[in-house]
Length: 177
Image (cartoon, rainbow, N blue to C red; front, top):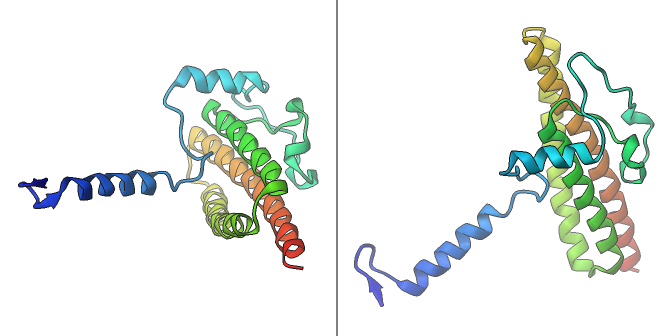
């Protein structure tokens, strides 16, 4: 059957819609924002308190080898509930991928390696942007707090991505022998 509006077959329109949905799902799983604010706050409260105004997080990310091995009370603290929830989704996603690596086919591991390597470039770019913004000294206190939170999120995400990439490299090397 042909749609008179655009002279396309109905099947072609359906496949176009499927492609659009696939394109929309290409963002990383942990970057998607949650629609329900209550669920976001509930997730944030489950894993510990959020930083209050003026508080500083004493977690030194440089000393942590693998964030995924930290107990829940050792996780970095964030000012914004949405970042805490995003962090928890990120931890869950990376833990799932680490388990998946054990049983994954080499082609899947190689594909994830390429995706994570590309994503790491974006993370590092964002991190540099936030660092430069914070150095300008032109931000209001609330903007400054928000940027520090986002910078911490980038640092945490970078550490988890680097850790996952190293595990993927080991799997790729062992699979090619």
